Image 1 (cartoon, one colour):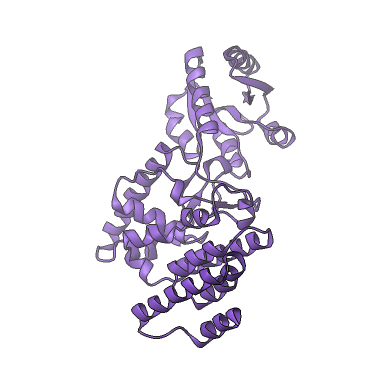
Image 2: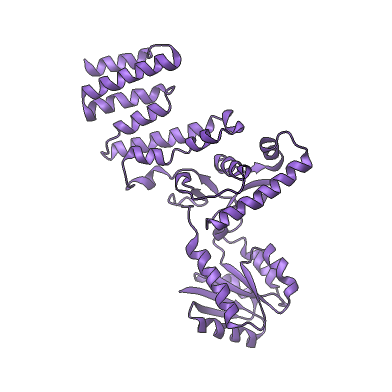
Length: 361
């Protein structure tokens, strides 16, 4: 059951709301506070899912208190309770999920509680298996995102490929809309961000795009407004018990195929995407090899994906020889000979030839 705190400077109003919430049987009210300054200490002592805030309070308004909650690492969901509907717009500016108007009716309470419950149980697609603070991964291959426009998709992948770096507004506009005026580019960016966030919300992903100090980045609504680092694949240690073969895992998280299919102009000039995936894949195969997991076919897959990476051929050959025997090694070597001749018109390098001869000697 969800846990809630009610904050209202009027004792009777707070008690009444607490009683109404308890009767829904959807939430447990742990505290009813008259002094808004007592809220932060309460949140530090116990896990709280949702806070119901009165807006008009003398010591600290509900809006001011909500601003303080945004700074928390894992802020609770905020629902405003007010007698003044004109506060509604300001409520959403401080990331409140919803608001209800006094006197509060049971139907309205159930509506907002079900909305809170949906947000808490419905978020998906972003995982923090690394346990490293603000570092998360987004499994591109698992995503069921439906982008409203091609630019929404391009902006999403561009930010994803930034690997946790923020994207300053004007370089971002120049990259995605290189031939337009600054005013038109700024308008295009605002519209694209709005539409992309709509898609993320509709897909029930705990992920949004936000401008922070003139630069765009990913944030996690459930974790507050601070930028988070998103990687397209999980840390290797999180895949120790992954289902399927190692080759299937490498294919599943090979985000380069998505970028290649889209043929974005900005992807042509950047090798960091290839390097990020390749370093991750090599680390994963090394980890699996130490754990006794067969890695030969995984290394062959990587050599096929990156034929110009000589190190992959050198890694694959001894692994193939050890796991599958000389016949598999000979077949792989001949395939590499044919491929190098087709792609580059040259024989295999001296180091590859020498390693091959040493293994068969």
